[in-house]
Image 1 (cartoon, rainbow, N blue to C red):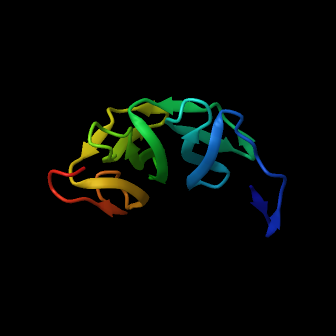
Image 2 (spheres, rainbow, N blue to C red):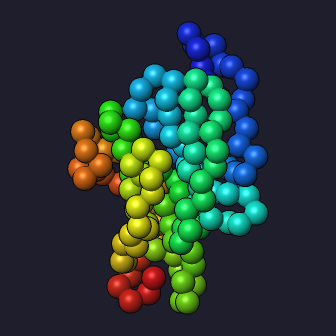
Length: 138
């Protein structure tokens, strides 16, 4: 929901999203959001520009995306969880989003999923919070 001069505006709906959980705005009125898609159960990413919802882009290989952090140049790092593996657990995943061009989903061993992410001037220098797992379990 955009807030202008301290006043909440009309909520923004993303028809292909089940929920939206992360948002980062590299410039005023220019944001990237992430979350989980509705029917497919995959992570999704989209834009929010000047209060208008952009198209939802699915991120195959992810179950959900909870966090996003963007730098001033519009590059973002998305964080979440993979699809559940054969042992019944997800891995934490990271996905580079360079101005709408998604990179490869990177699984991080011994994690169950990531929440929020915060980056500095580069998406190569970030801090991420999430859940750990025991080696060999998830």
